[in-house]
Image 1 (cartoon, rainbow, N blue to C red):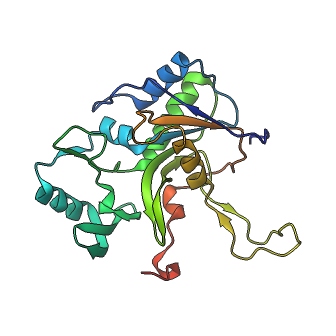
Image 2 (cartoon, rainbow, N blue to C red; image 1 turned 90 degrees about the horizontal axis):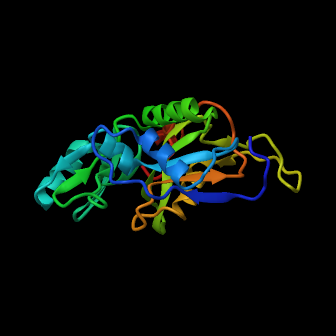
Length: 236
């Protein structure tokens, strides 16, 4: 676990357009080398899902808006809400997001990008490849941009994780005033994903970054651990 209390965000620049079949880990390793970035204990790698989806062939043709809406319906496991053309849906992974995660940004005209079939597995493959190459076990988070109920704007969240527990459970501990915390769980994987997006972003063509110098919990976990179950969700 990292001990340096100063966080650093390192964009991995120069990553080319990803095509189906590309080795995402190899591309990231080449970018890090070209940028003069060394891999250190305590680093966490954040990768936008878009390049993972492209490498895994999760790109489909969409001729018009009607086809796009049909695609959203097919990708949705459950439609939670509708308003006009906007659909809030639960994906097969369990994530609740706009348009079932189907995205037409940062992709060629007439195409749409779907979420990876198994983002946790994708994160694990990248992590394993990097560990073999650099001799360090670097946790990997695959991120996507989500909206949030009750708040305007978008932020990046974790949709795939490997090598990091996505939640820090503080229940049963005490706060600075000595009061016992009864419900506090920190979505650390989401916080790391959002931090990394500060140096990535949709318009910067930087689809990966290293977050360095923070404390994060070791352990297994899945990105779906961050999804509130239906019985706990007051708004479904």
